[in-house]
Length: 479
Ligand code: P53
Image 1 (cartoon, rainbow, N blue to C red):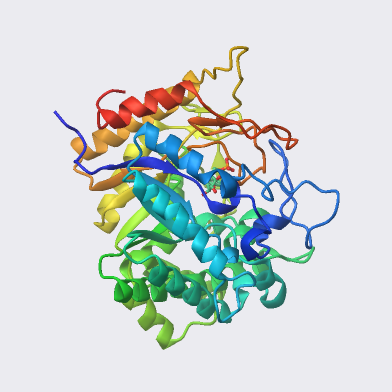
Image 2 (image 1 turned 45 degrees about the horizontal axis):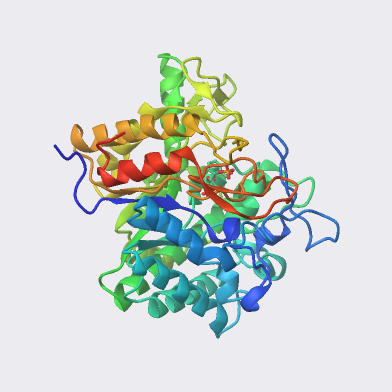
């Protein structure tokens, strides 16, 4: 019996800045990812004021997909990929972000990438903004603090919809837009919204800027969705969230309610994307706090007119929360209320491993939104070892993915979830977003390059490559 529908989009996912390299080629401008140094496990990346000589910026070269894309897509085709999720680097199309005319060389690069995909029957699934906004927009406008970014983004999106009409059908606007819920983390503020804060900025300053920036992004997303539908009614345009279920630490009513409030705080972005208006719980929050001060009637009309066709999401881990006694409003800020879950193991990077959490997530999202879902990231970051014979044995990666795919199939088969596809993260090794490492690997395809930036960039097939190939070939039967 086939568990998954025919045409299920098996594939893998990446983002431009984490694999392309070629950071100054083809007229590309500098992005926020180009000024992020390498961190390490437990060490945050620095965001420097421009490129400082002598520092290590791993995204500059990444795995040089810019020159290897034919070879890489061929390997994906060999695994049987039906879909390949990548992003369009905004700075290849609009190097500064505020130009009126796009950069032809950048547009042509993606023509070639998408043509290469279609050669093998691979459907491109495209994120428009994946942690790589133009650095110029950060410096000259303060990032998404400035309402004018709405127009810049919509222009960029419109150029892409027109250019790639007929070639790209599946789109997503902003990658993991809900990551910025954690407004105390410099990384999320910078990568989501280009928000950089002076030392001494208070929680209040940060939250105010983040919620206003989010509002402009939601309006920009809705306007882009509307434009995308007008340009090609066949377009399927989704949102993209980092879905991290929030589970209560105990059955104490305060913990249950804390988990509910945490879910709300993370989910308001997708609520707006799908429903076209702010949920009442957020209106009440803004009334209390005064955040998101600037919202117009035109904005509200735009939100209503640009709702998404599907919900794309990443799933890596679940989180567990307990209510702290002094948290009067059950406010949730990132991990402040987070506690250990004694039932779950963690990865080397401290991310919980919770396959059933994926089934829970699929059920929750299906119920709340009644829209098709797409898993556009999932996976295990791990250190791999190359044997003397060149082989890479990665049973831990297979075990992680197998367990998650099983739960995904149960969600479709037993719970009736409408799921379009499964694209595990980093199908080819690439630069980690969070740490800037190369040695935190997700791939089926190994790339010879280490944290210090040394290596030949040679590609090779890990054991998991052959395993995933037969998973796809059997439409998920043969795990
Ligand atoms: P890395 C944090 C939590 C969950 C997902 O992450 C996250 C992050 C950012 O660190 O990001 C997504 O590379 C993101 C990808 C990223 C991937 O997860 O830190 O969309 O760009 O690479 C994995 O291990």
